[in-house]
Image (cartoon, rainbow, N blue to C red; front, top):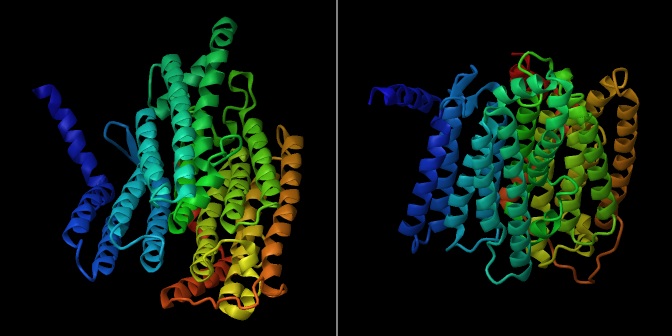
Amino acid sequence: MESFLPLVDENLRSALWFRPEMALTFGTLVLFVLDLVFRRSQARVALLTAGALAVLAAAAGLLAIQPPDAQALFNGMLANDAFAIFFKWLFLAAGALTVIIAAQGRDFPPERIGQFFALLMAIVLGMFMMASATDLLMVYLSLELVSMVSYVLAGFRKGDRKATEGSLKYVIYGGVASGVMLFGMSYLYGLTGTTSLHELGAQLQALQAGSAVSVAATRVALVVAIVFVTAGIGYKVAAVPWHMWCPDVYEGAPTPFTAFLSVGPKAAGFALAIRIFHSALAGPSSPVTGFAESLAGIPWPAVVGVIAAVTMTLGNLTALGQTNLKRLLAYSSIAHAGYTLMGLSAVSDRGMQSVMIYMLVYLVMNVGAFLVVILVAESTGSESILDYRGLSKRHPSAAVAFAIFLFSLTGLPPFAGFVGKWYLFYAVFERIDGPGGAWYAWLALIGALNTAIALYYYVRVIRAMFIDAPYVAEAPPVRLRVGYQVMLGAFSVAILVFGIWWTPMVRWTEASLQLFRG
C-alpha cells in the first residue's frame, strides 16, 4: 500500500495544474446531459450555445490563473509550461469562434447541435493534451482522441454523400497514419528503452556516440522510426504526401467544423512537432540549432525542408484548378502547412517563434475566410466561385472582408499574414550563412515563388467579387446576421492592426519560448 502513496501524491499535485483539462472533461459530459434535458426546449440552441461558451470560459479562467512555471505532470506524461499555455489559448479561441459560428448558421439542425458542441469540447481537450504531451504514450493517446472525434464530426451531415465519402476517407487514412506512427514509436522505445521525450533525446545522442558498428546496426531502425513518427504528425498537419484526406474532408464536413479543422488540429500538430523535434531529436544539453543535424547520417532539417517545399508547391498548384471555394481553401491549407514547415526546418528559436506567430495569424484569417464561405453558401446554396461574381454589389462589406482575408493569406502587406510569412522567411534567411546555407536559400526561393502562385488564385476570387458580372442575372442578395457582421468586422480589423502593430504577438511568443532556453 505504501508504494502507491507517492503515485497518489503525484496525481493530486498534478491535478492542481490540470484544472483546465478537467473543466473541459466535465463540460463535455455536462453538454451531453444538457442536450437530453433541453431536447424539446424552444430555446435549445441558445441554451446549449451558452453552455458550450461557459465550458470554454471556465477553461480559460482556470488557464489564466495557471502559473507559467514549467512543471512535469503525472510522472512526466504531460508538461505545464508557457509553450503549452500559448497553444491552449489558441485552441480556446478556435473553439469559441466555432461555437459562435455554428450557433448562427444552418449547418447543424437544432436537435443535433448539442452533440456537436460536446464533441467539439472533446477535441479541444485532446488538443490541450497534444500541446502538453512529453511522453510517447500521451502523444499517441491525445492525437487519437482528436482524430477519433474528428472522424465523427467530419461525417456529421446525415444522408450527405460528400460528408460520408470524406469521413470514410478520413477514417481510412487516419487509421493507416495512426498505425504507422505507433509502429515508429515502438521502434523508438525498442532502441532507447524509454517513452519520455526528454530521455529519448539523451538516449539518441548516446546512440550517436556509440561505436561505428553499433551505430550502423541501429541506423536503419532509427531512420524508420523517425520517418514513421514524422508521417503521423504530417498527416495531422496535412503535409504532402499525407494530405490526401484533406480536400474531400474539408468539402464534405459542415463548414464551421471545416474552419475549426483547418486551424485547431493543425496548430496542435505543429505544437507536437516542435516539442518532439526539440525534446526527442536534440539532447537535453544541446542548443536548438544543434538539432539532429546528422542523426543516423540523415540531415533531418533538410528532410523537413524538402517536405515543406513539396507541400507548398503541390498545394498551390492544385488550388489553381479548383472551382469550389471549400476545396480551394483546402488546398490552400495544405500550402500553408508547407510555409509553416519552413519555420520548423530552420530549427532555431526564430524558426519555432515563426511557427507560433503564423498559427496565431492563420487562425484569424482562415476562420474569417470560411465565415464568408458560410454566409454566401446560405444565400446561394452553393460553394462555387461563380456565386461570388458581383458580391461587391450584393454585399460590399462581405466582399471587402473576404478580399482582406485573401490578401492576408497571400502574405501581402499591410496585413497580418505578411508579418507571419516575414518571420517564416526570416528564420530561413538566418540559416543561409550557416551549414547547409545553399539549401535554405533554395527553400526561401521556392517559398517566394509559391507566394506568387497563391496570389494568382486568390486574386481570381477577388476579381470575381469586384469585376465580374453576376453569374445569374437575378443573383440572390447576401444577407448577413448581426453576429456574422460583427465577426467579419472584428477579423478584418485584427488583420489590419496586427499587420501594422505586431509587437504584442512577438513578445507573447518570445515569452512562450522559454521552453527552448531551459
